[in-house]
Length: 373
Image (cartoon, rainbow, N blue to C red; front, side):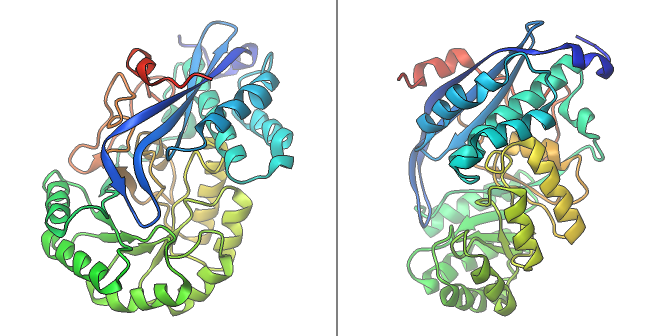
C-alpha cells in the first residue's frame, strides 16, 4: 500500500483490541529489586477503515499487565473510533481523558502501547518505515550488551560479558547491589578485566540511599564506569541533584520517569549525565520525541531503557541518540514474540526497512501464553 502522505487524513480508525500474554523467561533473572520468571506483554491492535492494522505493545515485569489491558480497552480504544490516524492529536486527547488517574505508571504505559500502534498504523498506511516518517539521520546505532545478572556467579558473569564482546557489542552493563559494596566492586573488577577498555556500565536498580551511592562512586572510581545507573529511588529528584554534585562517576537515570515534565525537571536540576527514557513508560513515541528534543537542548546523551527493537529505530532519527540497550533474555526476539527476529549485528542495530515499525508479532506462538479474564 503506497499512498501519498497527504491522503492519510482520509483513513480513520475502525476497531481496536488489547490482548495480554504472560511470557516465561528462558531462565530466572535477578537484580537488586526484582526476581523475574515471566513478563507481561500487552499488545494493542488498531484497524483502520481500509483494514490496515497497526500494532503497539507494553512490557511489564510480571505484574500490572491486566490493569494495562483493562485501561486500554475501557478508557482508550473507545475514544479512537472514527478518528483519523495521526498520533499527535490523539495522544493529547487520550492523555487528557485519563490524566485524573495520574500521569505516572499504568496510565502512561497504557497510552504508550496505543501510541506505538498509531505510529505503526500511520507508517503502514503511508507505505513507509517508521524511520522514514521521523527522518532517519543515520543507518545504524551502536548497541551495548546488558543483563539482569545479579544471580550469576562471578565466573558466569565474566563468561556472559566476554560473549558480548566477542560478538561485537560496543559496551556492557551489569547489575550491582549484592548487599556489599566490596562484593559489588569485586564483580565489577572481574568484568573490567574480562572486557578490556570498552565502556562498562553498572545498574543499581534504585537500591541505595544517597550516602551509599556516593560511597559506591568513590569505591568504583578507578574502574572508569561510563555510568552508574539508577543508584537511588527514581522519584528522588533532589537526591539525584545532591548525588551528582558529589559523585565521582557519571550518573544515568530516567527509565522510571513518565512524562516530558518530569524529565525536564531532572534536566533542569542537572540530576544525571545520561538520560534513559523508556519509550513505553513515557507514553509512547509521541512524547519520546519531545523528550529527545529536551535531551538535545540540554546536551545530554540519550541511551534509552530496553525495548531495543523500537528504541533503536528512534535513536537512528535523533541527534541526542547515543547507545541502544540489548537486554539479554528480555528483547521481543528473545521472548519469542516476533515472527521475524530483529537482532543486533556486529554491535550495531539497523532498523527494519518495511512499512511501520516492522515488529511482526507471532500471534500463533503467543496464543499459548494468552491470559484470559
